[in-house]
Image (tube, rainbow, N blue to C red; front, top):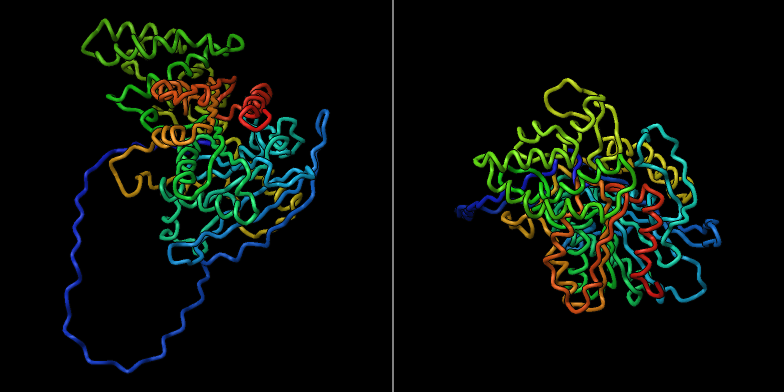
Length: 512
């Protein structure tokens, strides 16, 4: 799911000089009589042990096929460098009953983003054998949390393991302390812990020789390539393919800044797609002229700034027409349209706001007369209740995994405490582009498929296109592909996009 819960963090590079002084030496003290150490009081904050894994036989009846499979709801421990058990990662794994050795079958590990989001969105929205309808225009938190068989499941061509990073779903540290949370809540820490889980799972289940795939959504665009490169070079696990949905590959293209024009360039085609979608279906070809303008004249005029009145007028007129806003407002904003502003202003005359996750999904503006935007996103906040309810009922009811602790679909604490520094450096902006490039260069067989919804404003597709245009081909340029679909951040909420996603992803797998 989301790259952010409230606002995308603004990454500011600061040079910090840190000093260290050794403790002062003390005179030797006389020996003391040994005393029996006092018994430590019972730690009432410590979490109860995770339940034993539960495996059940299930099936779904789909058009022209019935899938029979084993599904396991369980957990694996995470230990620190001293071998101490510090946390558990909850997962749900689907293994299709084929009658053939499991080691010959592809296995895919899926995770969402946030940071702080559980894998339920990909699980119930796109890949799993059971699906929940959510994320569309008119949906409400009180919608029935009813699962249906998913004809677009990937279980036909790959086994599936859905991973909830520490602090999401039922995954958590044992102590619940901030100190232990720091072991997992950060760019590097997250890669280490999820890679650890994947290796542990593959070893435990005898799947080290299976074809291995990763699927990540949103912040999963940072996770996916970094985990792949880590597994390739540090854990001895090859990755056959990566699928990234609505990914954030580099934070250079996120947020707002008066002198950072890359986010504005990247968002413009998606904002234009929102306006075009009100007139009928949008195709990628329809956005090509907007892309050409965004990467050329628009960017040049933004660089000229307010000191060039003619440039400011050109931007106001052109951008206003493309994205459906009053040119006077566009000029007032200097041609740089933040997504919160756009979400509020596009339908302000109707008292409605549009979701920053999909510009075609609308909701009411709770405070239309306040000077700054302040609203609950109809997709992000609107999906929490039905997805959480469906997931808890499915895990504890259908799968029979009973656990007495809250299920965290979106954990705001994890998001707010995330360490965006990479391996202790506070001078880097989070990016997985180098990891992606290195992985492709290292393994000439690995394939990467990136998918975006055209009306997603929070991780705009044009940022990914811009990045891909600067990645070497490494022999076969078709190994790295970008596909665009109708819809927004959760493009799989559209039936046609979910089916297209399945068809395109299947081509990465053996026999596809």
